[in-house]
Image (cartoon, rainbow, N blue to C red; front, side, top):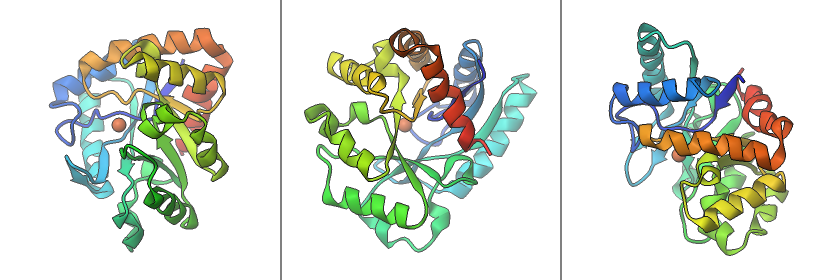
Length: 237
Ligand SMILES: [Fe+2]
């Protein structure tokens, strides 16, 4: 299959994801068994309620992680990334190395935002990134309150040039029925640029792998391949 995961928290001990390397190994092995062979590792990045990780830390952690995986006999490749928490403060950053990009060598930025509505500073943060040449990939829109309240709001962001990364979990039944329905709708409407696991720990993986089968049933293998292989490959440089 050559699937690429574009969103996960498998770097151990960095955020609210895997607690130790053993957990990471279980996640990665379970996904390799389902056809994955490349992983962007995307810890929560920037100031959040749980961490304040900087991309340079992630790069060092991924080097170590790759070595440990190779020593454990895992045949897969790993690249750094990050899930950037959008914030009003971001627009005052002068140091662009604080912005995590896919592979840390592209202009694609995975971003998230957890407000109960889309704030004015959300627009400012997106503008700030775009004016600096970054393409914003918004993580899991199907889980955002502003989209659940008004599914059509996704078009407003799409018109601004924002791309979307959907989570496989809701498709596989990991969340509420409303989130599952919105994920299915966005998938069928071809809203997603990519699908990722957003896996945090071993017990997350089964739901996400079930999501692959359900996504294929909904939109077909070619569409799924575009979201899990072809588009992610554009970021693997
Ligand atoms: Fe995440």
